[in-house]
Length: 124
Image (spheres, rainbow, N blue to C red):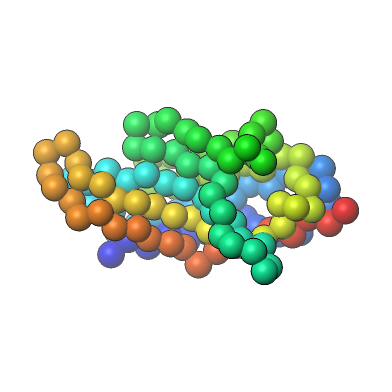
């Protein structure tokens, strides 16, 4: 069973930085996993922030381009989200997400897993 554990959230003032981590375990080495970060503010829907695919390609929501950066350390099975120039509207619960896909030689049932979330609060 895949397990995701986020850490690194906290409270900062606008303009500050935080680095979130998502440690994964339970991966099937024969499958491929794409990683993403989502966030959810009170009273709003969960939204995509950035993602990194198994091939290393990345994508970002327009609202965070140029300020956030997603990276991964495959040896540690950990994904990071470096958040700079934080704004009050970045406040929310940040969730790590992974989607399993078939590997090159093995068919893997598609599945999605979520972490428990880490809170980020940005004050003005």
